[in-house]
Image 1 (cartoon, helix red, strand yellow):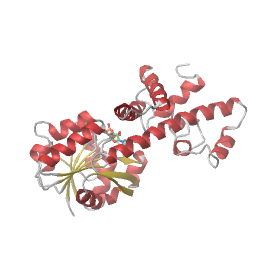
Image 2 (cartoon, rainbow, N blue to C red):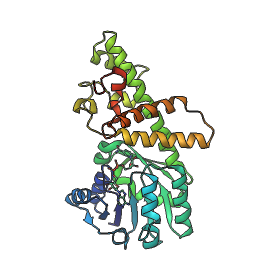
Image 3 (cartoon, rainbow, N blue to C red):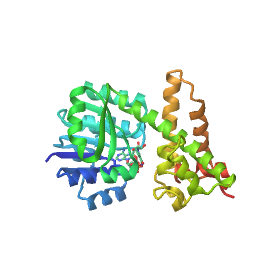
Image 4 (cartoon, rainbow, N blue to C red):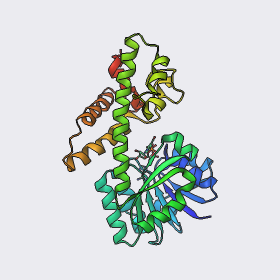
Length: 298
Ligand code: NAD
């Protein structure tokens, strides 16, 4: 049994830390949102009143935060991880953040004598709950190996990606493809209905044909076809449009830095921005189907 500090107990960090408790670890959690802490405590996490209290005596610190700015605050801020944890503590950032921030975290952690890995995840809230996430881990080989041991109770797949920031690079490129697939699925699904196809018949065909994708099988944006889809629940979020906009924005930033044209990615980013502009950023990202069928605020 190890002592695990967990900073960021939200939609993902909550169930992930619960799986660490279930694996027999002592987990000390901190979050700015008291509701998130209360939910985590129900799952067996011990509430810490500050980052320094959470990380004191910890073998490993996990961070699961929304964006780069939050990760910078938690690692670099007054009373943050780098100034309060023992340098023997392994640091694992599982947030999805920009490459530049990930590099800054690696550099500052190494300068202070810590082992640090960027270890973002794929698999959503359902994967976080089931302990079946895919982790992509970038960093020095010894730190990646140490992190792998701790990550096992939360993961179905743990894939070392190479040096610093390559975990984030893999995650950003994966999500670029996911959101383009989602937009393609929305267009195909609406056009199929308008051409007179039954929605289930079309899905049955596409899911075993070349139009198949994870988005089609998991997030089908037409109601009552796929049980896990937010379209069945009035687009209550499994992955918000705001988060999708952030992730595709990370790809666009990385693409500009590497002189890579993302014509389709840039267009899909505009679709999420339109949802946000219409006040729907908190709804599921698959709601972009309403920009195809014209039903947004109809
Ligand atoms: P979330 O907003 O539900 O949770 C983030 C938590 O971090 C919140 O509870 C917030 O209060 C807390 N937080 C923010 N700043 C903090 C600070 N300074 N100190 C302590 N706590 C702080 O987000 P989420 O859905 O759990 O996502 C977390 C990360 O995982 C994001 O980077 C996201 O892109 C990524 N991700 C999400 C999903 C998903 O399906 N939701 C899937 C894969 C990856």
